[in-house]
Amino acid sequence: MKNEILNFVNYLKNIRKYSLNTTESYNKDLEIFFLFCESLKVNDIKQIDYQFLRKYLSYLYKCNYSKKSISRNLSTLRSFFKYLISENKINTNPMLLISNPKLDKKLPKFLYYEELEQILNIPDKSTPLGQRDSLILELLYSTGIRVSELINIKIKDININNRTIKILGKGNKERYVLFGSYLIEILNLYLKDGRIKLQKKETDYLILNHLGNKITDRGVREIINKIIKKGELDFNISPHVFRHTFATHMLENGAELRCVQELLGHENLSTTEIYTHVTNERLRSVYLSTHPRAKEWKNGKIIF
Image (cartoon, rainbow, N blue to C red; front, side):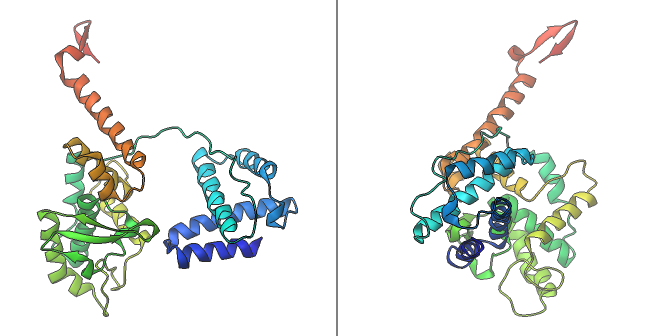
């Protein structure tokens, strides 16, 4: 079974061109499954059936994995067994009747415009690293791209005249994102000053670390944590919050859902629809706090 897992991970990495983070995530999920199989002395992939997978599901619950983790683990197994079918390693897919646990819907965290402005103004644009950090923030918010997409942008992917950037997204799918004057300003400054000073060797990657190498996913996260700490802000955010903020602000200002889907690179419209719940909640909050007919009086005070 170990060989099948290794072959599958290599397939994701080399054929499907999944990112390092994604393949590592798949590998971790399959490692948990493999150890469970070993504990029950199941070594042949053909021994695994629906009943066995039900036992595995019970095991995950007993280990107190969250519903989200269990869903991800089952999705990994679903892909794994689908791959085994395509490779003629098994005849039937035991995952067909296994359902994911019902997840509690959580609305994506996003930044209000005032909070966003605070963050965007923190980096010192007079220094190479400050210019780079400012560009990272502006790219994440102005385009809504993922961190994994940000770190792989090359200079040749940027068309300043058309204000577009070619992005290589999930599943090796290409799309174009748009940008405006704010991004052009910091991009030009970084390319003419900061990047030249950071660059130690020939490379086409846009965002460089302090050693002149292509920046990593982890590097971007550390930069954002430092920016929040420097600004002494009373909240913590991940890079993905900028993506949530991009989508929320677009919809709040009248963008069509299909357009936002295209810009985000979502395969299914249902993934993008979660942001409509965010905007609806925000609208409700604004309405209740501002409209006279939404307010009630009690003991001389307004209550909501």
